[in-house]
Each structure stands twice: as structure tokens, then as C-alpha cells.
Image (cartoon, rainbow, N blue to C red; front, side, top):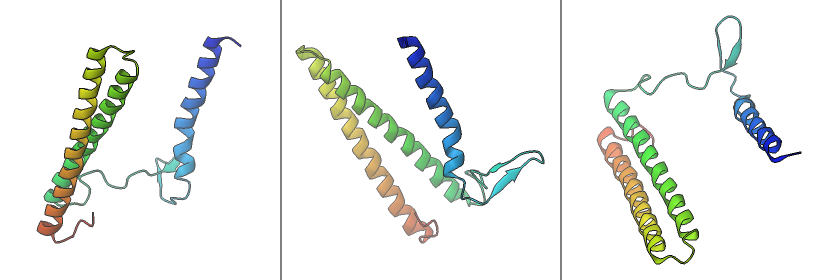
Length: 132
């Protein structure tokens, strides 16, 4: 089997896994959405606004943004590590990779501290109503 066929089969397998595995993971939900023809498990009963107050909605948006920024920080940490490994003795490339990793770690620390501070403040202001 040649390389192109192997890559195609791996992509097909991953696509099927992405499509089929969430259904297996949510098989025990018992809550189904139906349009009259087909019934599928409901992933969300309410959207981010759902039945929340305005303050809880703002908190949800901030948490989603922190999740995105934290994910980007981890991505840049991986990129910096890859650049460091592939520097091949070049000091300039290695130094740039070290700076990338340092800034990514600082960003990750800022995101974690921001999440902790926001959680503490909202628990104090909302009286723990959110249950984070």
C-alpha cells in the first residue's frame, strides 16, 4: 500500500471517529432532540444566554475568552518547543524559541490567575449562586 493510500485511510478513520464517538459518549443522556423524523441526543438545552442573568452571561463570555487565550498560550508553548528542538545548534533560533516558550508560560500563568480572580470576585459578588 502506498503512502497516499495510507494517509487517506488514516484521514477517513479520524473523520469517522470524530463523527461517531460523540454519539457513543452521549448515549446515556436520555435527553433527545427530535425534528419528527430523526432523534439525536441534545448537546445543549440552553445556549450561553439560556436562563441566566446578565451577570452570569458576562461571566460565561469571559470564561470562554479565557479558555481561548489559554488554548493559544498552550499552542505557542508547543510551537516554541518545536522551534527549540529544530534549531539545530543555531543560537538565534534557539534564543527566539526560548523567548516564545517564556512568553507562552507567562501568558498561561496570567490566564490561570485571571480565571481564579474572576471566580473569587463573582463568588463574592453573586454569593456563590453560580457554583463554579
